[in-house]
Structure formats: structure tokens, C-alpha cells
Image (cartoon, rainbow, N blue to C red; front, side):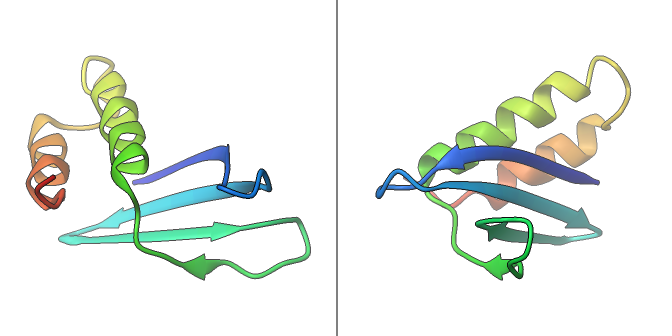
Length: 79
């Protein structure tokens, strides 16, 4: 399953975030434009919140299982 959204960084630069969930692996990548490469990064609390919200929205529509949602919750580092 893949999630993606746009956001701005601390400097105000807009970038695209892509979260790929495959099996028991979560990969976070971002890129700053059409002609740039994807860069892996460590997400902050706000990005985790966005991922959890997006995953939660997909569970009732059966686009995402409850087990997958719980896996995401279990992978979030403690605050």
C-alpha cells in the first residue's frame, strides 16, 4: 500500500511525501520537484499523524485492513 501527500518543510519549500508499506517494512521518501530523485528520510510526529489519519480513513472503505492499520500504529516510535 502506498500513501502520498504534499507538505512544506521548515524552510517553506513544498515537497511530496511517499510512504510505501510492503509486508513488515515502512519506507518514507520525499522529493522536491518533478525532475528530482526520491530521498529516504526519518519522519517526524506530524508526518506520523498524517499517515495514521490517512490509513484510518481507508479502513471503513475496506481499502486497508484493520490488521495493517494496527501494524502502522505499532511501528510509530514513542513520543
